[in-house]
Image (cartoon, rainbow, N blue to C red; front, side, top):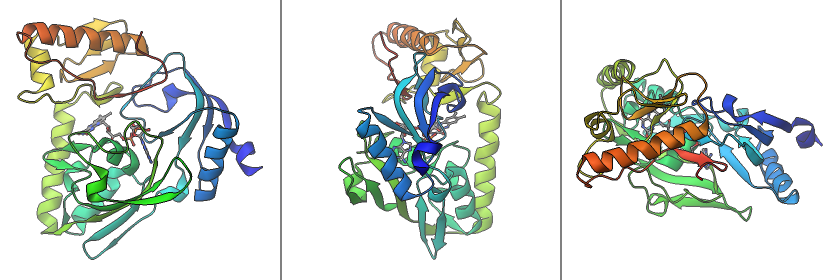
Length: 296
Ligand SMILES: Cc1cc2nc3c(=O)[nH]c(=O)nc-3n(C[C@H](O)[C@H](O)[C@H](O)COP(=O)(O)OP(=O)(O)OC[C@H]3O[C@@H](n4cnc5c(N)ncnc54)[C@H](O)[C@@H]3O)c2cc1C
């Protein structure tokens, strides 16, 4: 009963993604407890609808047609975390930047340079988000996951199969619940200082004044997406309301009224032009997760 009362209908995905793009989701629910989360999964199964867990929505391109299913956003009960000696145990809804900041002030190295990535821990582990030579999965001891069949499984570091923007959780319906990290004791002042520097560098290099989803493309082996796009003369190129950022060519920004189709079409153009300009050496791949029907 509690669940049914709190499920929202026709929620705009625009409001749930940093790109500020997307049609409406049929259902939206923010569970505060594990029991609520299990009930939400059951609700979707009974309605024969898919579900999708969203974090900060900072790596998502959501369809203009919306999502005919249930969007689940982990609520209050999923954001606790605790540092004990060099170990951090955190729930999946905890903000990554908060964990990174705390770890630095406590003198624990390993995730401190991830501050500034606008992610939940769950989304960051799913993507194995990284920056400045650190990756979210690097110092994982284990991850607690709600499996598709309703069971709970603890994944060891090896079982997570982390790679560049890769984890075993991608393209599954597994829900990350909690993670345990083992960090490295270090000088707190130095960590805080290094963290400050990378956060300032984000402000100067990234187009944070316009809605975006971070780097649109993965870093290809042997090159940098931003540099290749710049070299192809594509900075500032637009399709509808989507534009290759003039500040950082690896970012696509929403200049106001971009649709998912605008962004998708612009990525197609970028991939094609970079491929041609690099003498068929680099074929960029999108990093951003597509939600709902986007590609033709
Ligand atoms: C300004 C800006 C800067 C950025 N900088 C970086 C950067 O430096 N490095 C980098 O790697 N990325 C960066 N990103 C991209 C993005 O922040 C990361 O990919 C991040 O990991 C997404 O986390 P999220 O919680 O927002 O997940 P979402 O974008 O909401 O979701 C991403 C994927 O994770 C899945 N997911 C989320 N939570 C869970 C869960 N609990 N269980 C299972 N699956 C889950 C979703 O279903 C989806 O498939 C940036 C984005 C922006 C807007």
